[in-house]
Image (cartoon, rainbow, N blue to C red; front, side):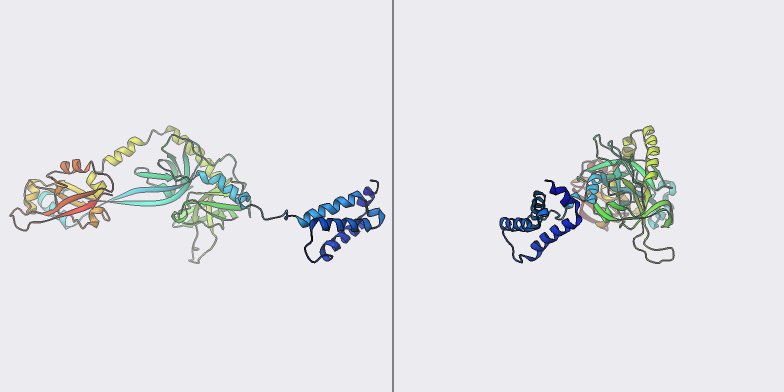
Length: 434
């Protein structure tokens, strides 16, 4: 064994041995050979080398080289499941939610029919015609606390607090949520899932360092497709931009794709730490020049400070269920299910319109795009029957519709019966409740 240190200590000797072995492996056998047979020949060559090289240490090296050249390659392609990006997404995705909000826009309009009311009864006798339009928006958010608190963009949930917010988690479950607080300056909002269970969450205790050039991943509800991701780099920090007349300040910039629906979703690094919240994409410069790869996010430190402030507000807020119930109760069943506004057909109104007295309920408004509107029902017509029951008051209609579920078909007998008995025009329409 004394020759081993000398052999290992001589670079010239090592090169000679490795060169001889390489020559044997690369040139001596163009055709595949048996592993055992090749080992015997290489051992023979090693022993044939000058005496100072023939030792057990050399034989061990020969065996190691044979393993590398005759076995399955040790440097095969890595398993994609072990890639850092894949691991980061798997860590964060369970806490990312899709947000679907609905809000109602109410506006009062006038038309000749209202002028007719005013002429005979004065404006105080006329119920204003109010059009209700339900507007929907989609966005993203992520849970930052196991109790179900979610951070998202203010523009995703603004003015939705008084109507409806629903969030869908990555496992496909849908929950109602309520609005807690928001800040237009930072474009951040805080909502909470109305459920008593523990949720996976993204920790804000350890956020990304936000180093220029680092890999970042955008996660969210891109163009309505849940659990979408895109990848890029952190391009810049401390950006100030104006998009759609909204000023954004202190943003981080990335070339990762940010699309409609990504707003409010997390931007993370390859360790799964928060870089920021997707906020805006600049498609054109102020001069109208198209751009590419200009996405912006609210930095993680701003998000963390805002969440701490929002949590203090949440502690002082009462339960929101009473407010939601009051909002829904103010909408009649006829309006909620079919988009019709109704009024009792009084004697004075019947005389002025020339309608038969004591029969039916007057339709005073139709919501655009509602089931009633799609069925061709117009304002000024009268409902005489709901299903198999005659109706002569709004109360009767409401009681009959109170048992109707969404999607159910209801038959309405609608038209006009003149007081003179002439011009009787009735039709029965079957309408599906929304």
